[in-house]
Length: 367
Image (cartoon, rainbow, N blue to C red; front, top):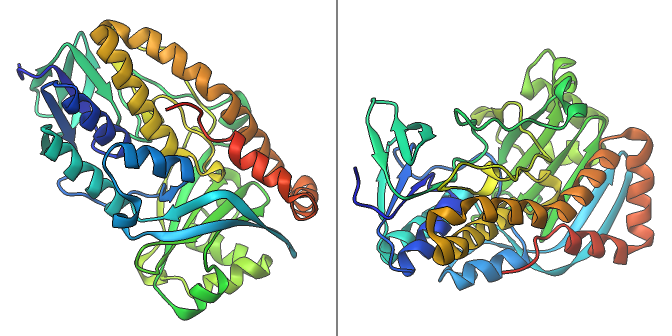
């Protein structure tokens, strides 16, 4: 037993935002995080203009995060490139800074926060722990990020199952060359069976995140560093940037990310948030927006109907994700296909309004 009105599993952006909303609504909230300290998650540091507005409503002032201002998006496909101004100013910030700010706001709002608590299963209003214990509450908010969670499979689309997507990350130390090459842009480097996104963060460092199919990684002997070096040799713009990467720290990796997956299913009393509700392709830059929007929608549903509102919330949020996911999936498939990536980049250069339309349409609507 906990005596809590709600348990939130996962203290990333979705879970911490939910804890803030619940605590502000007068709920007794217990926020559980399996890590023992706030870390720097693999990817997800792009905050769109709409996400910054949602953070502001939670009491997180974007200016206080000190992130890198992002005003444009660049596309690269082979030797082709394009640059387009975004519909609004965005921000690049590390997940350590973002998660730390949200967790601090949750505890200020009155939520209890416990680190080093590894939940393994959820059922019948209880969260089962690795140590054999269990915690119960009338409402449970599952915000465990991209990691699989027992009893709640997240299956990618059929076309991905034979060649699943992997997530990779390589860091770049602050360097004048990075300022010159990347500046205030978020970059998307397109290549066969994958893409890489690069932007600067609050300390001037760079974060390169890739979504790449397993078959492409297999061609490099299953070694992420070897794959990146192969890409750097084949793609001149990416290679110029990789010359300044922090290779000694190595390449972080996460396997079988179900990009494009979303669900309308849940159990009674269980609100599935963030990547446990849907995983938008990362080139859309809406992962953090989805996390925070799902938290807001889940808390709003809980206010009106308690734990019994969870099934209705899940169906409504799945419907809300349909349009941005459909467009993000289409752009992803065009971008990782060598036959269409170049023409898509050329079209982006000729029709910048089209890029801005895609940027707007892949945002989640509503509060």
